[in-house]
Length: 293
Image (tube, rainbow, N blue to C red):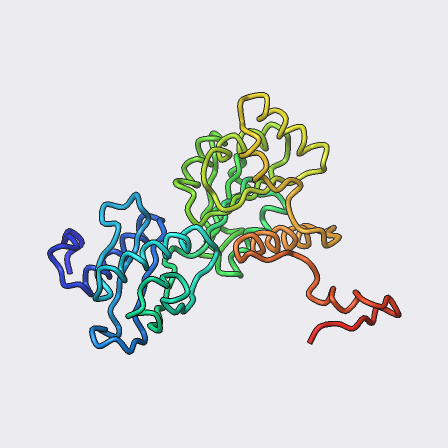
């Protein structure tokens, strides 16, 4: 199958494969819908429909075998593109009750995108620890610093850690972030000026997560500077500052853990609280409430 082949010139299966490869190459997001169960005599079990980001030239590829069903699945899949959900099976009646002939049919929806990415601005103790932890967790990390000796390959042998020696913070960050799809950014540089340059470069993009290290005072100074330079409150509210969950972190490794925990919570839709908190609610007697089953 030639990379130059268009989806129209290929079989349906090959066309969907090409669409998936384009999704991964472009760093965009798609959803694959597969018909896995149906009592409808017109059903073709295993039929697939690829729904790509609406900006793609071929927004949909393939068919589930029914035009109305395709339209309903496309409409529903668009909500999946905006969510953190990765894979789930739905019955058609859950999202398209006006299609009685397909109401009991089951559709598998799978989110297609690159492995999660983390751009780290600053390769000091925290940034270095964060890059290594992200690498261990399956993230593709990009570690940026304007000090070449801090982004030396001998210090980071991991293949999924990209190292960038920045001559200009803003340009390096913009190049690393690209369109921002499936991307988190952690700003952990050594000073206000560097923080501001990095945040200014990324604030207007649609990255999944932006975190800024520092005390409340330090982060407020940086945010105020951006506010004074026309950054909107809507954009500024998306910045996690200070970055990370409150786990009482002290060492660079602990701070990195707090940051990654918040990134994962944002990506998966987690609340970031203690899973055992329910045990301490209720009677207050020794922390033993009625609890939940």
